[in-house]
Image 1 (cartoon, rainbow, N blue to C red):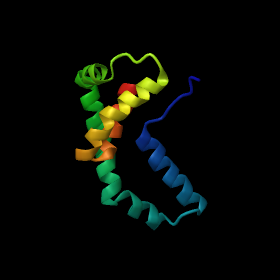
Image 2: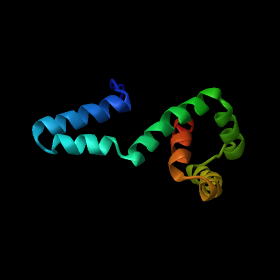
Image 3: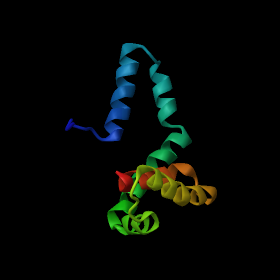
Amino acid sequence: LDYPTFPSEVVLIGGACIFALAGVIPPSSVLEGLSDTTVTSVAFLFPMAKAIAATGWLEILVSIALGTPTTHFAGIVRLCLLVGPLSAIVNNTPVTAMLVPVLQ
């Protein structure tokens, strides 16, 4: 499955423009949604997560923490033991943004 992909910001802005032009949502709502602080704060997490993943340290730490599980169940249990305590002290969105590229 090798489909061409577009950057997430292109999909977000393009989809919003298509919906606004089609009359599904009013154009003022598009701009209000994009200016929401929650949307912008989550949007800023992805470049930071990419930068952290680019250093390679995250992959090393995750490989040490997860090891080499022999079954899918063992891998899920190890992942839960890593993410559970981490999510107790850090917001879930940055944890997910950082771990998705590593676990793929």
